[in-house]
Image (cartoon, rainbow over all chains, first blue to last red):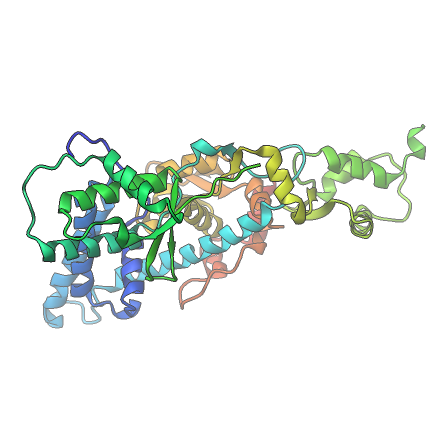
Length: 241
Length: 200
């Protein structure tokens, strides 16, 4: 794995992850169970580290913030500060999450407007920007949902067999071939079927990385049956004229 | 044909045909100066043109965007126009870019650091990208230590999203949190100021 240069940039930030976790576990944003969410948060950071994803330093800063809040909550209120009207230590974070959530909502409305507007063209300067298909930037993949599915496969594998240490020369290329081969017959496949039962941890990681790379290259796409539903991997249909 | 025999409507139509940007009425007034106006105002002519296009089933419509008028193809023809550009494809703004743009739109003028506080993550690259696409511009520097740049949305931003003016922004979902109006009030700005900023 060492020599495989692969760094997928992560565009989501720590607030995205927190909002994701809140949504996933249907937590009350005004009353976040800090211990629980900190544990979950750290688990995702761990997953991203296993995958050697290029994560922003802000993720670690947020981890520190969460742990700080957690430790403050452990103190009895009178010891937290001299202030009688001492605020809930979570409140700053809650405010930040609420504000960010609001702009995420606005971004969704903007996206709808964008889709509506690009159906109509003007003369002169072209109203929408076109790029050659091969240069499309990395579009948003629902990274956290994929990580979720990934960690399930990983947990499952660890239950079956202890972490192994034998070297494996399964390459990213092998992983890529496997994904493409399994998708081929019907053009789509359920996420967990990309992996073998009793497969080694290394292989799972490699296949998953190959999958992320294929998504980035827009060769495959991820479809989900509603939020937190089963993940399906599908070949991207190339538009032909 | 002498200039005085020329009618206003076809001239306006011709101008709109070639214009690369939405044209405000004021600009059209200047451009068509000297042409005899019957009793109709330019605004009425626009309405007339739009109705004619509709009635005759033309492929264009006149849309009001970014404080101006623009000739645009009808939505139903987009699949064929897209083929014209094939194999190039439309690039959408990424989620991160849309979020950043939303923050700028509602809180302008705003500094990069202020945006980063809200998003919780670095926005350097995104700002560069939005500047390149002329969706935002630097509108000045904030009078604080380091004099950081302030960013605003441009007219192109309104055009890109098909908005008439900044007061057309979709309302921010309120959750007992500051609403657009409050945000703008707290930044000592009025909608009109924002629009004026965009007209420059």
